[in-house]
Image (cartoon, rainbow, N blue to C red):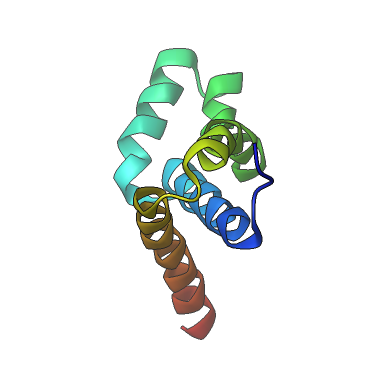
Length: 98
C-alpha cells in the first residue's frame, strides 16, 4: 500500500470539512439535527455530536480516510472530492468576503 500523496490528503481534508459542515451547520441537515434532539433529548450526547464540528469531524474523518487510502488515486474519488472541497472553500471565501 502506498502512502497518501499530498493532493489526496488535501482533498480528503476538504471532504471532511464539507461533510462536517453539512452535518453540523447547513440548513439542509437542520431537520436531521432537530430529529436527533427530539429523539435523544436536547442535552444528549447525540444531539451534542451533530452540532459540534470538532466532535463530528473525528467520525467523518474516520469514514473518509479509509476510502481515500483505497481509492484516493482514482478519477472518481478525485472528482467527487474536488467538488466537495471546492464547495467548502467557496463557502469559506464567501463568508470571509461578505
